[in-house]
Image (cartoon, rainbow, N blue to C red; front, side, top):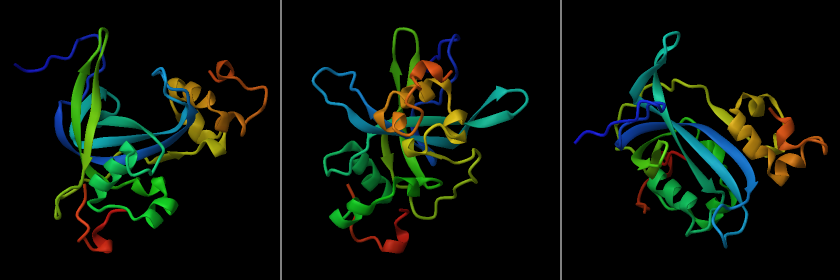
Length: 205
């Protein structure tokens, strides 16, 4: 039976595997865990656009790609979800030396496949990224539609921060890293498995 999106919510992409391009890497700073017993951790948010999945969100702009996102603990520990997804994406495991110097902004503009699942909540259905994998060699990837965005909490309240939605501005503003790089008087309320045989040149990042 086809999945029906409630009419009261913003359209979301269909579940399944989709070609995707990374367009945003947002440092959220250290965030408290909503799960009892878990410590605060440094978080990062990755956003992808889906070039083959489009919707007319407005008459002015016409059809645009859907976007999906996933929040990670910023850790290159071998058991971390961030490292596991990156290794699945690049098709090659990281060496410990690579982990120590890895720059997460290198994924910007890089294609992959994302597995999207629908998660139903009482008032809304979400399109969540369940897995990230490498694209087959020779896959045609359309040009990126949306502008790339990279934000680091060390940059404080800059123009990139101000371009983010109010929700993400407030979330970032709660982090000690952001607060250390802004006015001391500022408060949130003030801010309205891999194949190691691949050649290095074939690895996307």
